[in-house]
Amino acid sequence: MIWIIGFGGAIGAAVRFLLGDFINKRWSKKLGRFPVGTWIINISGSFLLGVIVNYHLSNSIEDWVWYFVGVGFCGAYTTFSTFGFETIRLIEDKKIKIAIEYILSSLVVGIASASVGFII
Image 1 (cartoon, helix red, strand yellow):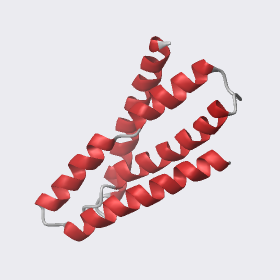
Image 2 (cartoon, one colour):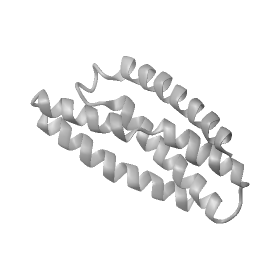
Image 3 (cartoon, one colour):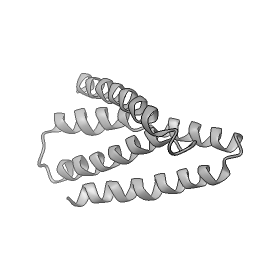
Image 4 (cartoon, helix red, strand yellow):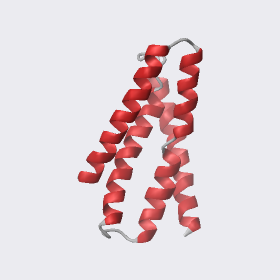
């Protein structure tokens, strides 16, 4: 199963990089310093993980799908380390209000997205 996780992770990391770059190039100037790329990726990943966890817990998917999508893809697609790094950079740049908005919205909307995904 480890190769399935690795393959899902490789795809998740590549999608995160490409999508984050695409989003940031189009939205960063409009939203100031708010790290919109990472935010959208983490929110959508939380939603997808909520969906896949629900299917996994109800035994509606095979184990390899859980390992590929839930553990591999979502694990590499979402990124707590980038969230932390971007928050520190905002604080260092004295963008405290944006940092607080980023932290709170990431946590609240991320958990809500995972919950909605789980319920669907």
